[in-house]
Amino acid sequence: MSGTPDSVAPDGAGVAEVEGGAPRGAAFFDLDRTLMVGSSAFEFARAAYRHGILTRRQLAAGAMANLKFRLSGSTDAGTDQVREQIFKLLEDLPVRDLLRLGPEMLAGILPRIYPQMLRVAYEHQDAGRPVYIVTAAAHELAEVLAHVLTFDGGLGARSEVRDGVYTGRPDGPFTYREGKAEAIRALAIREGFELSESWAYSDSESDLPMLRAVGHPVAVNPDAELGRVAREEGWQVLRFERLGRRLTLTGTAVAAVAIGGAGTLMVGRRRAAPAPPPASRVRWLR
Image (cartoon, helix red, strand yellow):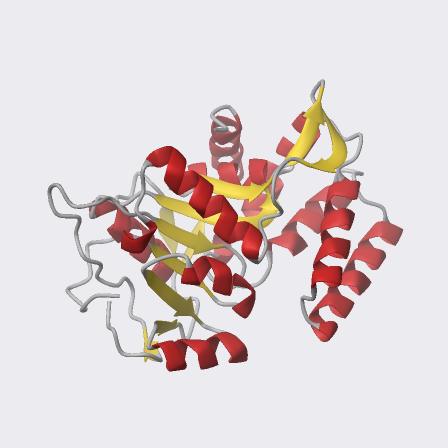
C-alpha cells in the first residue's frame, strides 16, 4: 500500500508480510462506509420490519434518532441514547429470531461490499494476519458476515442473553468509539496479537480510538475530520471512486452460508496486487 495520503486505491493493495519469528499483528475493518457502501443498519431495519420485529413507529423513531445523532455529533449523551435504543429493540427477542435475519441482511449487504477492500483483507490473511470486522452492529450478525466473507471473526455489540432470549441489556462495552478500541485490545490479549504490528481501517472520526490503537491506521473514503487527522498524522488514505465489481450470492447460497456462520458463532510500500480470491469463495458479477 502506498504511504502517500489521499491516494486513489486500485483493486487490492499491498501489505507487508509477517516474517518468521516476528510479532503477529491483525487487521481490523470497520463495516459501514468502509468495508461496504452505506449503512448495514438500513438492511437490519428493513429485514427486522419484514419479520415483524420492528414496527413502522419504531422505524420512524429510529430514523429520527439517527438523524439527530448525525446532526448533533456523536456526543457521549447521544451515544448512550443510541446504545440504549439498540439494546432495547432486542429486549425479549429470541436469539434465533435475530439470527434468522441473517440471510435477508446478507442479500442486501453483499452487493454493497467494496471488492477493493476484500482484496486488502485477503492480502492481510495471505501475509499471515487474521482479519476481523469491528462494528456497532450486533455481534452475532458481525460473526455471520465475517464467516461469509471468510474473515477470521467479527466483533460487535454483545447483548445479554438469558435462556436464549435477549434481556435488553449490554454484555460488555458498546463497540463504538472507545468501545471498538477496548474490543480489539481485549482480542489482542486473548489471541496474542501485537497491536503495534496491526492495521485498522475506517471512514469515520468516530473510530479514531481504534485507529490510534494500532501501528498502521488507514483512512478509507474518510469524512472531513478523519481526513484532516490523517493528513496531520501522515496516515495512509484510500479513496475508491466507484463500487466496482459487485459481490453477490444466490438466495439459497446466502441462506446456506448464513446458517453455517450462525452454527459456528464464535503503512508500507505498494507492491503488485495479488490475484483475486478463488472463485470458490465468492461469485463476482459486473
